[in-house]
Amino acid sequence: MSPAELRARARTFRNRWVNQELKQLEAVRRRLLRDEVDVLIVSDSSVSSYSVRDTDRTFMPTLISRQMGGARVATVAGPGYGAYLHDEILRVLSTLPNRPKALVISNAIRTNTMKHVTEHPIYNYPGTRAALAGTKDARHRIRALGRGNDPTPERYAAFEELKVTTRWGGTKTIGDFRAHVKGVGPQPWPVELERVLFDYFHGELFDETHPGLQDLVRLGRRIKEYGVPAALYWCAPPMERGELLFPGEFRDQVMANWALTRDALLAGAGDSLRIVDPGLVEEDDWDDPQNATEHFTYAGRVKIADALAAALPGPYGGRA
Image 1: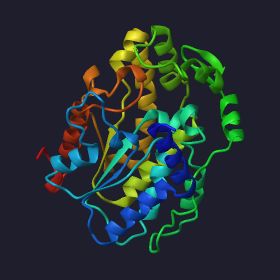
Image 2: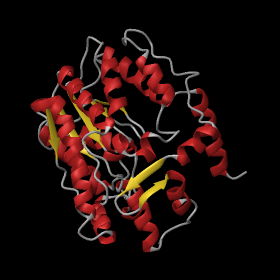
Image 3: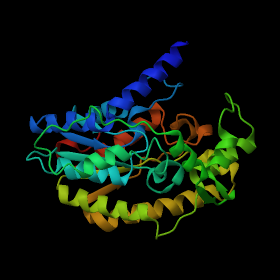
Image 4: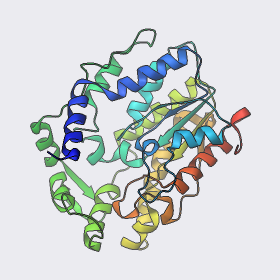
């Protein structure tokens, strides 16, 4: 068995028995009780990713700490985290007597609205949702052992049967899309394959009735109730690459979806939330523009950290 296969088996075993989301939350809970948190980051996989092209692979929480004058940072984040989990995390932590001095939130459109993430057996986090819903306050230890997630083959099969309607692909099942993009090997990929991937990730159609938007409204209210200075950064997809694949259409598609998610957040949060624009426009800002994901290079991560530092008041305002 290769080292990669051994690591994959170890991760599967760990995740089956230990809930990584609750483990993070418990660590942050303890730090807040000790008054050891200046900036709380509630985010997604953008805080734990880097590019193979990076000469500096410093993760975003460390960059944010640096740009905020050495602030003590605590993070609860993971792949597929969206508004529902963010809201529940803040609800649990809000029962503690201590607060951080500032809050940083991320928003990726996909994690709140796109079926290929929200319904995915890995990213749906059913055990975490149930555990958080049953946690009334954070005065006691949050147990992670024995609360892992091990999706069954039946759940994967049901997931692949779900239908989605996208701007460029029409109505297909998740399985139809995945059959095109699974096991395609290393880049460079044919343009048609990239088009399928970008459509699958970012082309799904939704409107103001989408239930994920109500999760964002509730998250906005929670941020307001939490009562500390808060800033949100948008995890934008590789726009320039998308425009090359769908000229004159991709940006319009993404920006319309971004406006819906942004407006939902602000409907709940009002002026208690600053939404920052890091100015991510160059292909070099993204880890790998061809894979359509919202992960960033060192240059992109620094832009986000700079924008957040400038948006938050007091000792954390402005670039360090």
